Structure formats: structure tokens, C-alpha cells
Length: 291
Image (cartoon, rainbow, N blue to C red; front, side, top):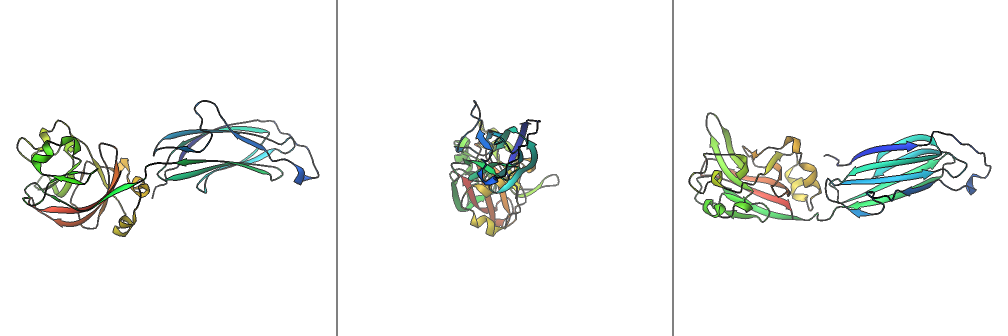
């Protein structure tokens, strides 16, 4: 599963060397280390949303006798940078793109030639990790007379064709079945903005909407057990890869798990249950989506 820890580093260090012997290492001070406090820098624990860019800068200086010999940066105990240096001072700018984890503890440390270490930390917390869960949501294909065909993913509300037309801004998904020489979509989920035409007909069909929300889908490798265990949005965010997302989830099979992202920017996962093919068939899904 992808680790959403992204960074860029600009390091400025002094090039001069400085050595002073001392027989009582235990009495030496560790190197100094501080966060940069200029405009634009984060200097303390902060909240950040998924994919937000955070700028952190550190400045360090030797204790007057022992050069700084190592710079280490880690996130949630995952080492991001472990660099050997031999300098009197250093200045580092570090750009973080907030990942999917609810909390990330970023640790910055410098160690000197006497093995004295100084550590500073910043905790980045992502608010709003709660999800809504909608179980056994059944959507009918275009000729179903027993199940609604359209869905608002944010509320779990189903709509008939006519109801959906007067609630266009709420519609994220619809179900259809298509098996022609040129289109083998079979049981498929798409959205009004996916440019699917000729399936639903009449004045209230999605192609006549003035508000056409787009939802993107991608099949994941998650098992149904992994899906069932999800209680917040961390895995949901980690599962969606925009590079491999499409405007429809086609030929749905029981047991598959799909990631999705709605027009409103909400990320979700759904597990496919019972699939009844044909134009009068349906699909059952369990849906977990960000609040």
C-alpha cells in the first residue's frame, strides 16, 4: 500500500571544519537545533489536510568544539533522510506533503562528533478522518422496475430516474448494463459526467443534466475482510490512485473492492456484493466514504 510521505530538501551547510580536543566528553553540550520561524514555515505541531504542503526549516550549530556529523529526519519512525556531514552549521528547508495517516510525527535530529544528539519534533494531524458506512445499497440497471438506479454517495440516498433529475447536484453514481458489439460494459457504475449516452432515455436522462458530477473509480487489491475492517479514511485515501482511475467501474464481480473519488472531493471505497446482470438487473454494494 502506498506510503504518502513526500519531501524535498534544500540543505545549506558551512564548509569550514573546526576541531577542538576535550578530555571530558560528558561535560560537553550537544549541538543546538531550532526550527526556522520566518513567514511560511511551520514551527510547532499543526493540523493539515491530505496533500497539503508543509514547509519546515531547521538550523543547527556545533557546540564550539565538536562538528556536526549526522542529520537524520524520520516520519512515524520511517527514516526519510540519514545523512553524514562534517560541518559547523547547517540549514535545511524540508517540504512535506501531508499523507493519509491521521497523525505523522516528524523527527529532526543532529548528532556531533562526540555522539551528542539534539532532537526536535513536529506532529502533523489530519482532522476529519471519520467515515459514513452504507450497507447493502442496491442499485438497479436502466430497465429495473424494482430498485432505484441513482445514488448520492455522500448520503447513501437512492433515487429513481425522475427523482435524480430534480436532484442533479446530489447524484454521484448510476448503474447500467450494456453488452453490445462495441460496448461490453456489463454491470457497471458510472456518473452523470462520464459521458455515457443512449442508456437512459427521455428528458430526465443524465445526458440532459445541467449539473453533471464526475466520479472516478479504480479497482483495488483489497480483500473483503480488509474492507470490512476499515473504520476511518486512512486506507481509503491510500487506496485511490488518480493515475489509474477511470470514469466507470465496469463488469462488476462479487467480492471486488473499488476506490472512488466524487466531484465534491470525497474519497470512498465500495465492496461489490450480489450482481444480477442484464438491463433489468442490479448490483449490491457496501459503501464507506469520508464524511
